[in-house]
Image 1 (cartoon, one colour):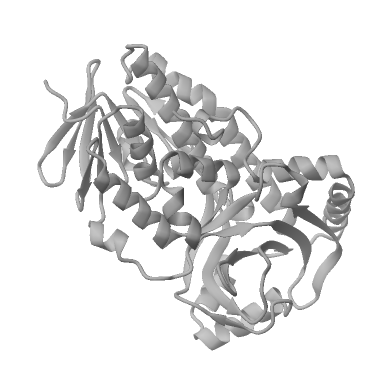
Image 2 (tube, rainbow, N blue to C red):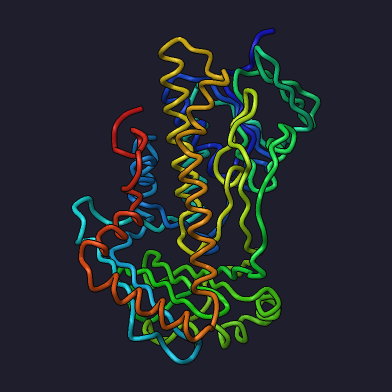
Length: 408
């Protein structure tokens, strides 16, 4: 049978459209199946939801022609300060301070608001003749054969392609229908997410303050605003989330401190439970998983989206190179190259974030002393400190071409 496109992507959030644009650059035709109507994705107002986009992820966005439209709305991350302490008592004297000036490549990353990134993706897909965006439809069934893969949509339409990509989040239906199981567990923590406006400038400094219930990340946005990712025990978070805005701020202020002056909410408040969710496999017959469909990790290091972008750059490179060699891009050995490239890194990130959360989200006196000492040692050794900076910038490991600033 004829194929509707070379590749079908299930999921229209961030990962799906990004992969579609990368594959289109590599000469593939792509259909993106998005459960949400396009106006819902495109017409979002400011709500504070933002991402820490690492340097190498910014290179990916630039290589896909997206960065110029986002750059003016972004905030460079020039420094990162990591400290440990308790609410209302201030940080420990031992801390880690990472400055982008210690590496040659530039800022470690940029803060990018969700609304600007989504609009840029939708506009770029609409401008591409190689991409078909099916919004407001869902996949009900899928079937992989030796020659192709097909999906049946809720609208009754059937689509065929050479490869099916699951970019449909932690509860990935694509993974479930392909028989891919998941490993994971909950943390009994909830992330409270919002944006705040503050009196004093942040100077492009991101803060990570570790407290016994969970970390508080303060991430700089353009102007005198910051994005907050505040992790608390699930029951405490539920109680805080039920408060009025004024009472919510009363709970936040002793944790936030006064180093940026008075604070107030800017936009909506969100919350989501924290867990680890790792797909047992990244590929199945004619099927591959990317982003949260492949790995959902704790936000403690802010690397979830960046790991997904590495998936995207790696899979686009594997498929593009296979197509140029005349190979079947959906063949088992082709997709296995992607899994071999990304499996170890994804598992290592999941274990690292899990370990960091267990290490820092407790109030054991001995553990607290050891981790404070460890932070002090890292901060005192320039070579070790520089390695942490390069890791935060995404400059370690085997980088796909798009993350090296090279064309696909």
